[in-house]
Length: 182
Ligand code: ADP
Image (cartoon, rainbow, N blue to C red; front, top):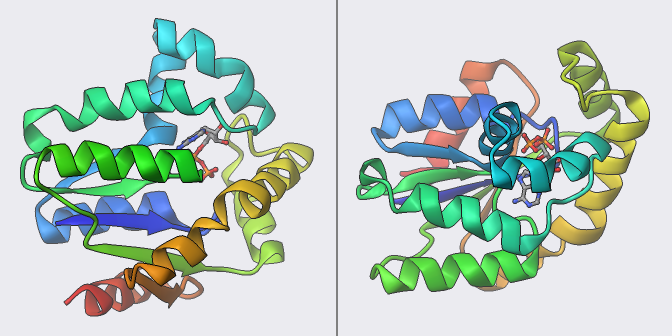
């Protein structure tokens, strides 16, 4: 099963992806985590990505494709995966489709987690990651609205989209997602 967890920064994709991967017994790929690890280890991809991640801008699609392709060739991905933070642009969605169809697979569901902007900002300010400063958060939200949110129409037209209220207890939100997938 291939599930995309979709939503603005701070809606709880990362938290829910970990729980969901465990519940469904499938792998979890967070492109944000992959970039942070690559930056920490100063790999070639990490060096390319760092300036974008620090500023809250999108890493260029070709660099994203490199990290995703590598991860999805891993053995743990044969049973499917939860995609968290990918795709974030239309070219990324097209690249994903090609990558999956080469393996005879397709996206099964796109789960859109919905949380209002003010709740997002207060959650992220509490988390305090390096890119969780208010001006950078606002840039990430603007980038999401401009470049990523349009994918909602694309996946809705494909009949794959389900929207879930992301406000409430972590376990409650998780149950809502599982219910939507079964
Ligand atoms: P959040 O969901 O809070 O924005 P992520 O960990 O998903 O956090 O992403 C952190 C940063 O990593 C993004 O702001 C962006 O710079 C980069 N990034 C992650 N995934 C992608 C992607 N699919 N395309 C481009 N950039 C990405």
